[in-house]
Amino acid sequence: MTAPFKISRKEDTLLKYRDEFVIPTFRQMSATAVPAEIADQPVTYLCGNSLGLLAKRSKKLVEEELEVWATKAVEGHFGHPYGRGWMWIADTVHPYLAKLVGASESEVACMGTLTANLHLMLNVFYKPTAGRYKILCEARAFPSDQYAMATQVAARGMNPDEAIIQLKPRPGEHTLRTEDIIDTIKREGSSIALVLFAGLQFYTGQLFAIPEITAAAKAEGCVCGWDLAHAVGNVPLSLHDWDVDFAVWCSYKYLNSGPGGIAGLYVHDRHADLPVREAGWWGHDPATRFDMPPTFKAIRGAQGFQQSNPSVLSIVALLGSLQVFDAAGGMQAIRARSLRLTGYLETLLKQSKYYAPPEAFFGDSEELKFTIITPANPAERGAQLSLAFLPLGRGVMPKVLEQLEVRGVVGDSRKPDVIRIAPVALYNTFEDVERAAKVLDEAMEAVAKEGVSHA
Image 1: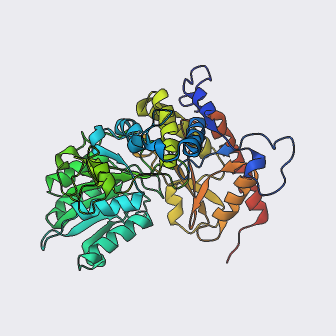
Image 2 (image 1 turned 60 degrees about the vertical axis):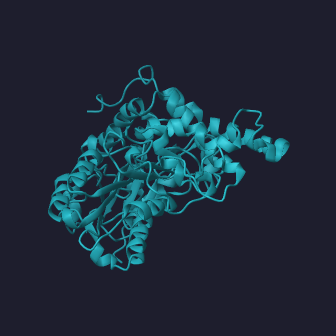
Image 3 (image 1 turned 90 degrees about the vertical axis):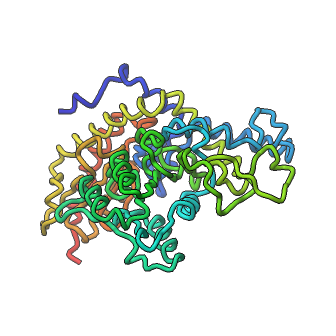
């Protein structure tokens, strides 16, 4: 059953890009002593959905910029020995980002942080009226998005409980159905000012039907925006052709820019002349920016929303990773390998004696089991698989996570019962997938021997 997914190392043409990244070792990742025979072996890192690994090119570029800072100081803005003058540093990544999200360079800006960028976009695009004032989102949106939406609604004098429609999965299901989202848009559309979903849901790993949902929103006269934190660098995107109004993303997950790395935003070019409400000098026309004129003249398009000069170190850390994406052939090639890796992992996990189908998690089973709550359809997910553990609410998940970690398999958890694992196409291997499935069984065996608390 595994043959359709796993391919030979000779056929695996993207395998060589693993060497572009620094893979931590058991010794480096462990908080306790590690047996000498495995101490310097790489861990099985399946946590790129939370924090991507360091690209060697990024390390080199950051070191170069530190050298420039040390030897050129302020002159690095214009007289840069590597041709990356800090005045134009963001322009080094805009072409790459445009390719990744399916946009023109003028439609993207590398800037800020995800939630700050979301607030900027909400200030421009969320224009409630007496009749059209609601925001449609998923019920379990990432908390930062929920906070942003709620405070934006409250700032306009409305009650978030009334103005925000939060869609939940049907009873007995883990993920939202596209038809339910579209039906809600059709039914409530005249009162909806903004449709705002995650491109890929952080908890379940569900990839939403971005083009279909966007089209449905636009047909009802709604603005449509997307949080692409878990989608960018994970799945192919065509934001311009899909007629998306705006999007925001972070870059430290699949784009591997480093912890707290610089974020990005997209604005469709039909909105290129919208007024900037929170202007800053880096969004001013570069031709006269350093003349310090008293009147703001926005750069046309997304880059007019820039406020302060961006972190050079953060941008070149991102640049190094983006260069690897480009060398690997872009998102279509990366997605093809990702589908194989994730499909192979799913197949192996379903062969475990501890696996149970998703519907088992709506009962009262006392058996120690896990299921996959991420959609089984590869077109409805990215690299991430979210595993939920039975019995629910009994502390199984933290015990399993601990057992994985001591065996060198790195995933992450989301309370109360989910472990997320993501084989990333640029640096994970089919051997990583095999080891993860094997170690998960070992972890479940260890937890079974320990026993499950009835607390």
